[in-house]
Image (tube, rainbow, N blue to C red; front, side, top):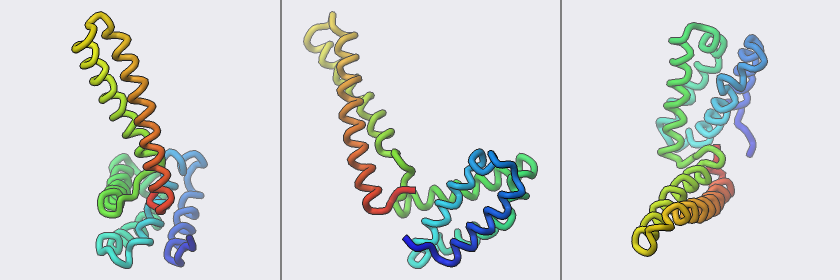
Length: 163
């Protein structure tokens, strides 16, 4: 996807501000995630009023990145709070999720449901095999959850709905 001039300018400003930071701070403070969020906000800003407002917030964050991240704890929390608010919006309103989100979520759900099913099966049939039933339910639930989650993640990636 071709990036807009607004995003290119924002990215350039953020990288210039980032050059004032230590090398590892780019990853530690998740500036790359901020840029991905800004890219998605730019994509939806034409039809979403909240995204349009978030573009202004993104510009302010990029221009003052060094002050936010090298300031006191209060300024870093303000940066994180603004980025998290934008992330929550694109996740809830536009269904944009992080990579492997559904794989993790469905794996957890599969493990819980599989263990419950294993416990129920052991209780109803042979109570002496509770450990084996729980282990079997855990494994089956995990496998089914991971497969289902990967299918959903691939579908999201195909539609361009991955952060």
